[in-house]
Image (tube, rainbow, N blue to C red; front, side):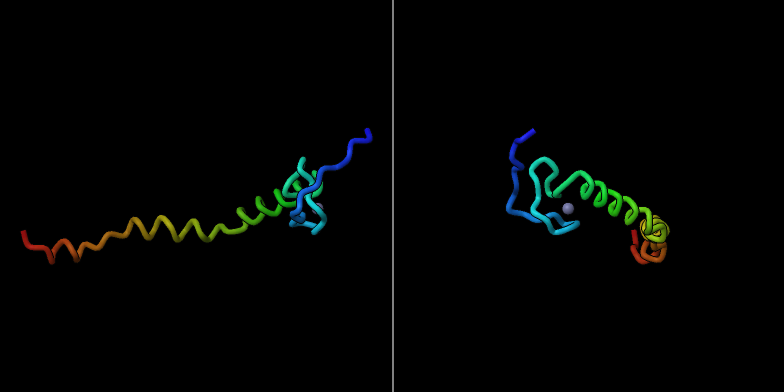
Length: 70
Ligand SMILES: [Zn+2]
């Protein structure tokens, strides 16, 4: 195949090479995979966040109910 590689003005966030339309915003399939890997590992690397969220919403203030006279 001698088809010319179409390039975008942007750069690959992984290796800073000119991005390719087919793999945008990356320069190659490899860099695309690398980014995906980073994204996934970064997401699973924060188990502590799960403990904070549910507790906050499930903590009503019973004191406020008493303050309100009916
Ligand atoms: Zn790249």
